[in-house]
Amino acid sequence: MTNAFDLVPDPAAAPPLRWGIIGPGGIARRFAREIPRHTASVVAAVGSRERGRAERFAREFGVDRAYGSYEELVADPGLDAVYIASPHSAHRDHALLALEAGKPVLVEKAFALSARQAAEVFAAARRLGLFCMEAMWSRFLPHYAALRQLVQGGTLGELRHLLGVHAQSLNLDPGWRMMNPALGGGALLDLGVYPVSLFHFLAGRPESVAACGVLAETGVDLRENLVLGYGQGALAVALNDMSAPGRSPLAVVGSEARVDIDDWFYTPSDLLLTPRGGQPTLVAAKPDGGFQYEAAEAARQIAAGALESPLMPWQATLEVLEILDEARRQLGVEFPGA
Image 1 (cartoon, rainbow, N blue to C red):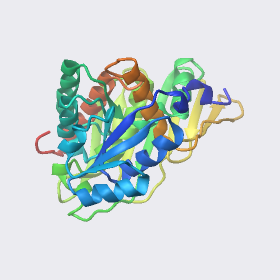
Image 2 (cartoon, helix red, strand yellow):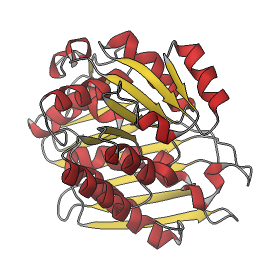
Image 3 (tube, rainbow, N blue to C red):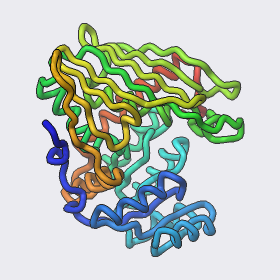
Image 4 (cartoon, rainbow, N blue to C red):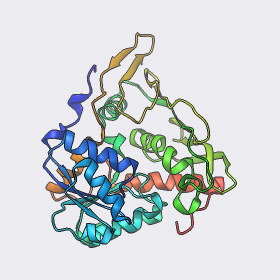
């Protein structure tokens, strides 16, 4: 394999959707920029608790309608789906709001504060017959498709170990949301969800979870190691750190070959495939943009009348959150209302 682009559908060929956005923050800005650029869909409306903020966002990205409440946004009859980009602590409530208004939803990762909250949302989607998916954008990228094929196709042999590091130097001001347990702060839900979701994507549900880490005075996790055990099979290790600058590499190692990503493994990347005793080969897999792949998958599934995506099924979201729930329990991190 030297090219991964043939493993994923062309986002530009997906059916068009008219998206509404809840929460015009930083991640929503990327969604609003990349979806109209790389797909047939448009961002038709944006909602915020502050109308002025929504209006500024709408002007910047050419969005037709701006609302000063989320209730107004989800009631818009001109929307086909809602992208929820609010903080983790609001994901459940905003997803339920949109679903009850009859709108399919794409909910930013981490999908909710806990597996219990996620189960509530999925139960509502099932009851209402509406599509619902976690916006774990990495799962839909070409290099993740290539990684999965290399694992499942036997190129790597038997999995031995997976190592993912996600380290960033983030704002540690006690007043910021990342330092607030009531808002789902800490490294786990923002950073750790990436390696854990990837490990689940490649190896499935682990048999054991072990966590050790360091907490901030506010009670959130600053950094931790997670070790996921797969019986006599692979070991997966995630190191998450929001308190210091670092690299974010990935190694997926099997008995016959290994794959490495030098940095920012969860973003569009090329792969370095090295067979046992052989020479490394570059697997091209780095597109422009990135968010278009998850939006295109949602559009395809909504057009087909599906409730969930086979690439990001509800069970996968629940199992990843169960891993993070157990890690939080061992670390002693508590989220009110989770």
